[in-house]
Amino acid sequence: MGKPKLVVSTGAGISAESGIKTFRDAGGLWENYPVMQVASADGFRRDPALVHQFYNHRRHELLKVKPNAAHLALVELERDYDVYIITQNVDDLHERAGSANVLHLHGELMKIRSVSDPEYIESLDADHLDTTPQTRGRRGDLMRPHIVFFQEAVPNIEPAVELVAQADIFVVIGTSLNVYPAAGLLHYVRPGVPIYYIDPNPASTVGIPDVHVIKEPATRGMEQLAKILTSRH
Ligand code: APR
Image (cartoon, rainbow, N blue to C red):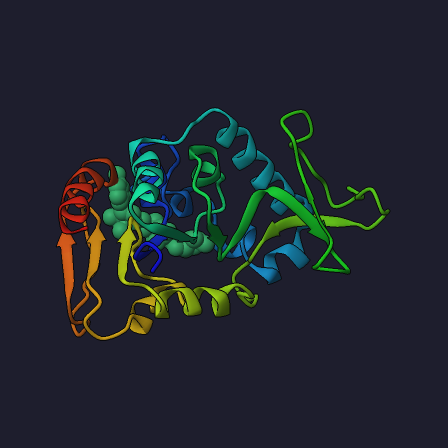
């Protein structure tokens, strides 16, 4: 019998205390950028250079920040649990914190992919953060940010649903539960499996049984959750 399976769904809120802006909080990313211009398929068709610049800017920001205590607390839990992270975030803070299993639903900022072949993906490094619509990969393909834009499919939602359906404990951290299909993962938890939701300003979870809301920022909420989980284990 392996360790209990702890499945965690994270949103922008877990990276807030690292200094990365969320999207919908006051002063959030979508207040300064028209989301449909910089993060949608139509916007990318209309002005690809603007979209490349938007993600170039976010990559430079990402290099200035590091994982916070909430990311690290999730790594600590791997001692007692099989921890699987499903994240809407495109930052690499879970990976940099040392999490073993990270599934990105909305893509990855530090990767680019072929415009013509979505399976062909390359990683960017600190010396080559910037891309343009003319950027070509090593194979010669024109490349684009490896991001799921609005109006595009979320290919990783199927494996994410499978993970949630196998969870012994499900944890949601720092998401406004505004964006589907990610927000719907809650509904795939087996009956009787406890759900913990850490968020200082939690969205309503009316209608979803067994949700324990921890109304705290991610770092403090994870301290409380770690105590609950290590006592029950
Ligand atoms: N700790 C935990 N949660 C926090 C903190 C914090 N310190 N600060 C803010 N939050 C919470 C907010 O209360 C909110 O519930 O983080 C959540 C941020 O919500 P959004 O900005 O909507 O981010 P998210 O839910 O991840 O957005 C989902 O929308 O724009 C798309 O693709 C983008 O992945 C993103 C998706």
